[in-house]
Amino acid sequence: MGALHDGRFRRLLVGQSLSSLGDSALYLALGIWAKDLTGSNAAAGAVFLCLALPVPFGPLAGHVVDRTGRRRLLIVTNAVAGTGVLALLLVRSTAQLPIIYVVAVGYGCAFGLLRPALAGLVKDLVRGEDLVTANAAIRTVGEGFRVLSPLVGAGLYTAAGGGALAVFDSATFGVAILVLATLRVEESEVPDGPSGGAIDGVRHIRRTPLLAWMSLVAAAAFGVLGFFDSTDFAVVDQGLRHPPSFFGVLMSVQGAGSVLGGLTVARMIRRVGEARTVGAALALCAAGSGLMTVPLTPVVLGGFVLAGVGVPWLLVGYATAWQRHTPPRLIGRVSAAADLYLLLPQTASIAAGAALVGVLDYRVLLAACGATLAVTGGLLLVRRVAAPDAVSPEATPARN
Image (tube, rainbow, N blue to C red):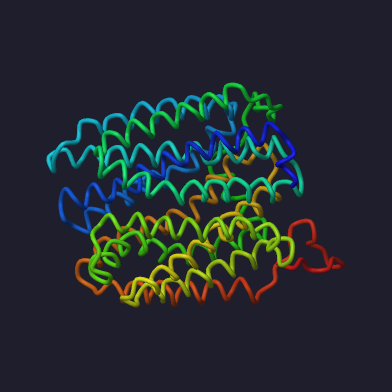
């Protein structure tokens, strides 16, 4: 059970998972909303591009996290995001489409602070091997809620419109604030004097062979993973001939796969190490992307299940690696740097996918994605790199 024995962690887990339910319900529906307003797959894909636009500013956000109390920062950020999302109540027609994009950018900015702050708070709350179970629990419960969130999002959007979703999401931000306000945790000390620069997280990753290797290979993989965001709607309407709302079904199926992945990732990491767990995740996503090219609903659903299993294996494996091998004073900047390695190339691939999906068959993009993921996954599976505490001439190489 590990971290789940700690009542404080259980409360944090519930609060963050409920907040994720609202976030997922809304930002997945934002793509549907843009598609309905414009009839354009590119307009829908641009929503996910807007979510990723703040990624280059991640090191600055990580520096803020390392210079601020993490619990307080989480409360303030949740409050601002919960208020800002209510701007969607103004959207009535295509003329207000820019509001959707502005809210998506705001989401990206909020997540840029929330992710490293939460990572730091979790590291302060649980220790050592319990990080694996903590990360796995957060991902598993979060994905469990996300099985429901696309259906909740599509259902609320269809029945009451996007404004109702905005109110619902704002309320879940409030739940997260309430939990954080009642949480008691001894946080790492915030340095009084100079504590290094915003790019120290990148430097730490580059100086740590295991993290450097995982980050470079994962960055190459994320350079094509953004194609999924732009091709999902094409899979729905061009491949399967379903209405845009079927996207919610696909996300629920992927979420079910992610629950399975979350339940198995801790055991996977203990058996083969973080790097090989990430490699296996990329291999599953490669297989899933191949299945998505087949214009048969059951086959496509199978592809989304495989991709769903791969998501927690990838994210928990990578997050556990950098959390384990990073001192608390750097955790915010390393978390932001890890996001930068993954999300910056993903942002570029989302932009490329949004541009290419209108001129290329979506199956070409998925095939390119699958081939790249297969190669990058294979690199992590076959090459061993010693973990930081095992780097010495006499040490036995880690299973990574």
